[in-house]
Image 1 (cartoon, one colour):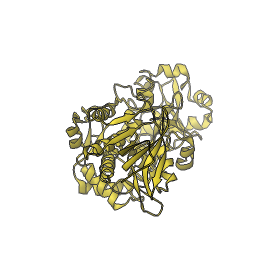
Image 2 (cartoon, one colour; image 1 turned 90 degrees about the vertical axis):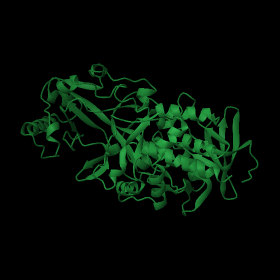
Image 3 (tube, one colour; image 1 turned 120 degrees about the vertical axis):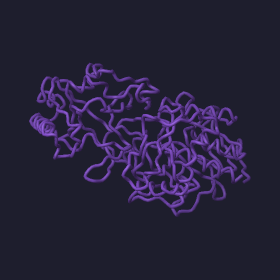
Image 4 (cartoon, one colour; image 1 turned 30 degrees about the vertical axis):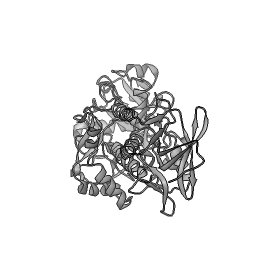
Length: 478
C-alpha cells in the first residue's frame, strides 16, 4: 500500500513492547517487513504486565481438544469459531517457535503442572506450562523477547506514546506519536498492531466496565486503555469488557498491592462487612474465577477481612517472597517486601492485633457480637471436621483459637482486564458492523481471547499466538 503525508514510513508499526508486541514485531520481521516498535514508557518500566508476570505459556498438546477446552471455558460467552481455531492451532508450537528464536525453554515444575480446570471438557489438552529456563517470573520472558528484537535489529523507540490512529481510504495507514522532538506521523504500509495492554490502570474504565468497588493494582501502571480509545475512535467494536482477573490483595503504597497467598497454615477465616463468613475461603482462585454455589464467578469484587490467629502469624509471610513467587509490579519494580513473620506489617498497622476476638472486631469496625459468633461457629466446624455452611475441605479446617488474634483488610488485586477491540482469527480489528478495519490489528491483553474463564499460562500464550498472527498478516499486506 502507498502511504503519503508522513514523517517516515515503515511496513509494520507495533504499539507496545510486551509479549504480544514483541511477537508481532518478530513475526513481521521474519516475513521480511521493515518494523518499528513504539512504546510510551521508558526502557526501565516498559513491557506492561509481561514484565512482571509469571512469564509462562501453557503447553497445548492437542489442537482439536484445545478447541473443546476453550469453548467450554468460555461457556455462555462464546467467541467466533475462527478465533477459537487460530488460538487452538497457534498455541501448539509456541515453545518450538521460542526455541527457534534462541530461548532456553523449560517446563515449570512448581506451578501449573496440571490444568486448574481439570474437570472441564477438553482439559486433557493441557500439558503444563513452559517458561524461560524452567523458572517463573523475574521478567525472564520480557528480557528474552527484548534481546531477540535487538539481535534482529528491530528498532524500538521508548518514551514515544501513540496518541491517534491515522486513516485514509477506509483503512488505518499509520499512527501519530508524541516523540521527544514533538508530534510525528508514522506511516504503516502493512498495518498497525495495537499491543498496548489492558485498562486496569484507568479508574474511569474500571468503574464503568468492571464494577469493582475498590481495588489495588498488581501490574503495570501503563495499562490505561490507550489502545482501546484509539481503536474505538476509528469505529472498532468491543467484546467481553466486563471480564478480568482479580485476586486477593493487600493495599500497599501508590495504589499498588501485595498478593495475599495463604499457603503456610489454615488458621484463618474471611468475614464480610456484616461480620459473617460468605464463601469457602480455600476455594481455588482459578485466575479470578472462584467456584461458588456450583458455578464459577468473578472473585473478589469488594474488600473483606481476613481473621487469623497467632499460629497463622508465625507460620510464614502472608504475601510470597521473591524466592517463592517473583511476580507483580510492587515486588519486582518497586522492591516492596513483606516480612517473613508478618511483624513489620503489624508495626505498620496493616495487620491489626488484639488479645481477643471481641477487641479485634471493635478495632476493625465490625459488630463484635456477630464476629464472635462467626468465629465460634467456624471453630465448631473445625472441631467436628465438617463445614456444613460452605463445604470447606476438612483438611483445611484449622481453628482460630490461639491469641493474640489478627485482622487484615483484603482488597481486590486487579491483575488484568480481558476486554477490548473485537478481532477476528487473523487478529484484524472489526467494526460495529462486523467488517474488518483494514490495516488495524490487536493482540494481547488489549483484546484477549478469553470471554470468561482462563487457565494458567493462557494470557501469555494468547499474547504470543495472536501477536505472531498479527505481525505475519500485516507484513503480508505490503
